[in-house]
Image 1: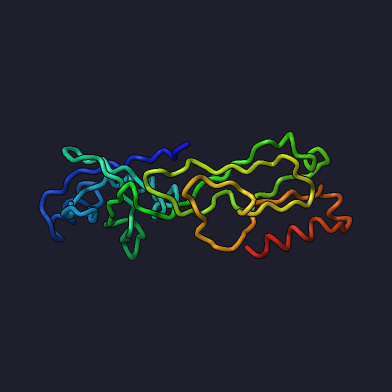
Image 2: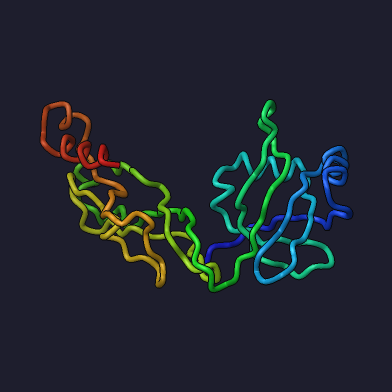
Length: 209
């Protein structure tokens, strides 16, 4: 399933330079510029509160947006820079780059786990310890996966799940080249405290991250 690309609403900014930018801020907007894609730069304004909400949600610089500007054709963009007030740490300007559907970009993709009921380790009291709830993948902008899936079928206590164990969507590759840990099946706390080897081995894997 393709990842749903969130909208970023903006409007064309009339006028350029510091004066127009200051006016935009007084009116409750954050000025910005859209560039790239073989087109002329476009000066825009983004609603301050809407932008702040997206910034607080996290991973703003790693998120692909569908930029919607009245009178303009929708375009996919990724933010390359957010300038902030040095005292208040609030956004004062942003730079957006147009992205073609064939462009390769790096994004964080959510990890889901399925078939818990088919894992013997959980029936024995084991628990799933998620090391990476998201993984950074290089993907094509026109085919961003909504998530990647880890199949837990047959997993036992002490099993460690690496990125190499996961079938990735076509065209997606991890940005980290080594075979890093995504999750492990930990022993029940009683067994770990009794000194079984499972918990120690899993902890060692996690520490590498």
